[in-house]
Length: 158
Image (tube, rainbow, N blue to C red; front, side, top):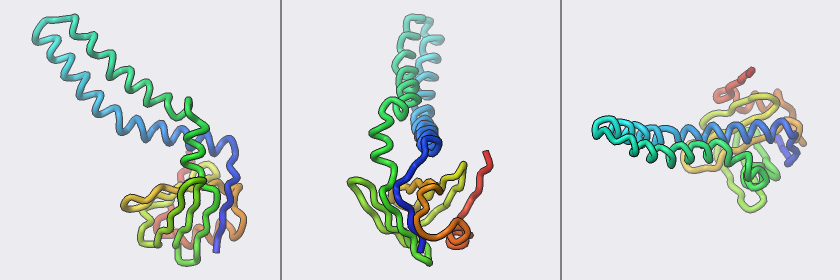
């Protein structure tokens, strides 16, 4: 059995904020890009340069998407950082946040990414992802963790 308790370094919190920013931008930019393209095409075809003012809202949305996780950092941390995570020897995960908990089976694990002293576990379906800092390892060891998730562990060196 492996157990993590909610100890997160400033570096791991910064990594999570960057990951949230990228995730938000991946969802926001394509929609805004389509809006920008439509406005540009219409402005050029109709020869109405004043239509370029309609570019302001999608650009503002992209800017807000980029800075939102940093501005509401405390809310993001409270919502995303676990208080306690227990992983059984088969890969079942019992995760608890301040206001939420979930139990997932080993079959629900999509991938486990190890990056900069942290683990990020993603799931199939509508389960909340789990972010863990190796510094919060309370019971067990990293080798046991790697053995449990050997088929889905991805190690990123950057």
